[in-house]
Amino acid sequence: MTTDPTAAGQPDPQASGQPSADQGVYGIGVTSDLVGTAIQNLRAYERAGLVMPSRTTGGNRLYSPHDVARLRRIQVLLKQGLNLAGIAQVLDLQDDNQRLRSQIDSITEADPPTAGENPPHP
DNA sequence: CTTCTCACA
DNA sequence: TGTGAGGA
Image (tube, rainbow, N blue to C red; front, side, top):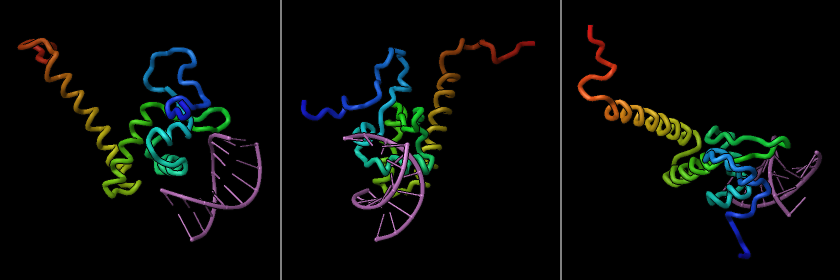
């Protein structure tokens, strides 16, 4: 194990087990290796509003698994020739679509058939 | 040593 | 996207 891409961070992802897959907090160095991009790019992505990593007291960026997943999508879109501004829009639409999709799924199934709460019978 | 920002190519 | 400078 001379090189551990997953185990190299200064911040501790396992500080005190709060099983929330949303703030695993990776340092920028770990994240750069994780998504396969340079540190300068991660900063550029944040400038463009593609990701909004939290900051530590000292001002260091803290990337959550959610941010890493988004950064991976950014890499794909970049490869397809989109620029940061375009990716911001695509990401926004994707996120919105996902939100709408789960809403549709929620109301298309999992609802008392033929008579639930939507048909208010007078 | 790592990270931060700004700037330039 | 890569690199440099200057600072914390």
